Image (cartoon, rainbow, N blue to C red; front, side, top):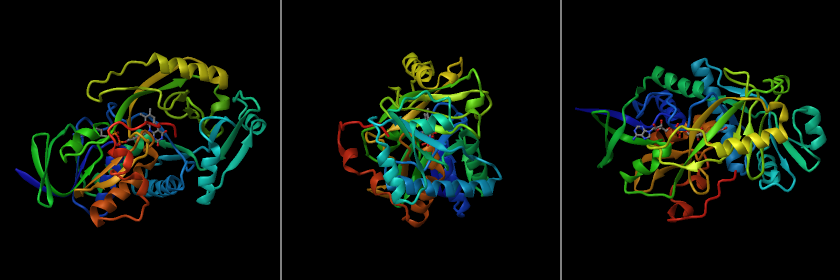
Length: 388
Ligand SMILES: Cc1cc2nc3c(=O)[nH]c(=O)nc-3n(C[C@H](O)[C@H](O)[C@H](O)COP(=O)(O)OP(=O)(O)OC[C@H]3O[C@@H](n4cnc5c(N)ncnc54)[C@H](O)[C@@H]3O)c2cc1C
């Protein structure tokens, strides 16, 4: 039996849920299909928190981040759920670190985003838990904060349903076939037909692209986050301590106390090893644990208590770590988004852009750096640059 929809979304993590929300909000008859149960822990969007920030390395990402805040506001109004929590954000690291703060400062200046440059003594004065010498500096942006990840994704799905979307869990898409201007989708024992298809399959992107004869260089890594119970919670309290990113190689990042535990989430960015998303394990990566623990003892010793929670999560990585947000060159009715291991904060606006592409065939957003046919994605074995 065939059922017809204006748009079908494949994959209901943060990005696909964002697309379903905006499509339904704009009146489309939309079906969303998720291979596992909603909110599962086998992809990229689970756990309590993700960093949201306007501090980014190109003006295009800064503009996208500004739009993301506006798009989360829309969700908060529609759902009645508070999902973005401003804590302020500190980009911090050595003056000669691997990631230049000047690039971030310049991008924000271009986009009229307010920020402060702080020297080490000012950082120590504001947040005495930092153990840093005068070789360290920082950049503080007060709008940075936390998106309540699982709650936000659930709110996107719930609100999409309120606007009329049909969302199915445990419905793996097993076949995608172009049939003239339409796509026939087989999932969970059903066949559907749609005019517009949206691919938000993250770590499973190579598999869904293969249905359209496309291949891109792509890597999935198994990352890990750790919750440390500080000896003294005071210095890390929500409302006092900001989210932060250590801008060097290796790069670390962390949060104030947030979520269900009296603990701070701290981890390494891109410290994990490549895995197959279907056969990956969920075990601890002791090398990440060692690197993060050593960093915490050295730089935030007051947080160096026991690890009370450890979670694994997948990064779906393009070689330049830029997103893909585009339509497929040979199939303009198929759009795709991949979040490159830093996409959660943008799920709201990427969902809106995907709905623009599906419903209007165009968008005002600047997607020039995020195209699926950009040169690096045409190479068979390009150099990988995962530092943000
Ligand atoms: C440890 C960690 C920390 C992070 N920190 C941040 C942060 O601080 N800030 C930030 O902005 N971003 C962060 N990110 C990145 C961010 O979480 C991801 O970019 C984002 O969650 C990606 O969402 P997604 O919907 O693309 O992926 P997913 O949540 O993986 O969703 C893809 C979905 O597609 C489904 N699917 C795949 N194939 C099929 C199929 N054939 N049929 C049906 N369904 C299918 C999958 O089951 C999955 O549910 C972090 C990621 C990790 C892992």
